[in-house]
Length: 137
Image (cartoon, rainbow, N blue to C red; front, side, top):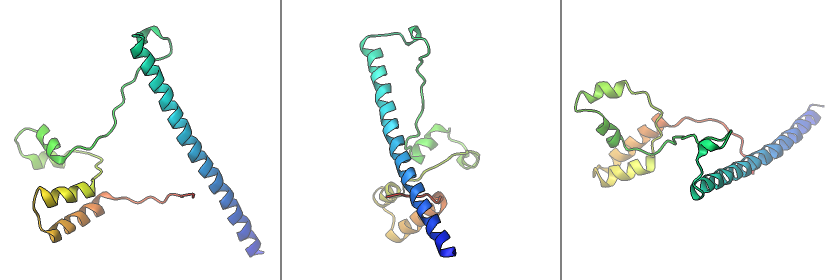
């Protein structure tokens, strides 16, 4: 009896996985389609020099995307002062590019390999958070 229930649940999981795969594929297609429509609208506005204010129900919204910024550039924003105090009070969501950081440490700082490896290991443990996701092939 329990074996039948497990087989039924397994089949249900396969069905859910197939639905999930289709939904993710549809989301990708819809996102691509929305982006192409948006680009087409922006192109028409530019080519025909149409004032967006003349169109009812349509407006342009500027969105900001996160970009890679070196810590050096962040430090350049602050005046020459007690930088440690400032850094302790910054709240940030930081994604560390471990490969580029390792490359920079190796070629720009000329650090020893063992030190670089220990720094990268510490940074990876500090910066990575794991979340369990379902992958459907």
